[in-house]
Image (cartoon, rainbow, N blue to C red; front, top):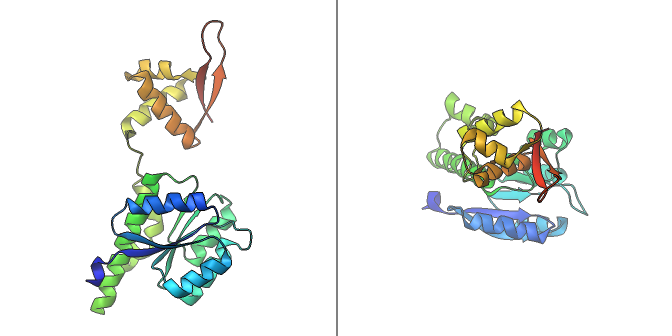
Length: 231
């Protein structure tokens, strides 16, 4: 029965709107249950001590603390509690510190649901596997150790694209952008043989990934058009 229990998650986030989004995301992923939300250091410490969560979703920036400092405390208190950082922090020092301390994953805001779900499902596999090993008092083999050690790198090997974005079509869009400057959605659509709406969806996805930029082109007739260029 223990193997089928939901993974208990504590959200530590001072922006309650973002915390609520994370809670709703968790509701959509089978196998997880939100047991609390903390908005500051005192609340976080109390809930960690009382609830003893399996997994913590942790921001870096708080008015009264730094998330990496709390991460150190969590790892010192209970090695079995795991942490996924969800933050706007992008500095290499912060990312490196979090990984060195022992964060399971590092997600940069704004959070895309598919990326969030990917991280949680990877964590579930990791969690269930360790539970089984502990219950069986099993000695780990090299392959099992390797899979645990290199879990952080698996994310770049199998990236998930948002719903409605196909990898091959995305490559074609990038090739069109690479061939010229100032391309409109209509031009992209004609060159790769898709509708203007579809081309626009792919272009806006690339903007969200910060791979391209958009500007407005004011022609002599009609409304201004969005023009896309590689960064």
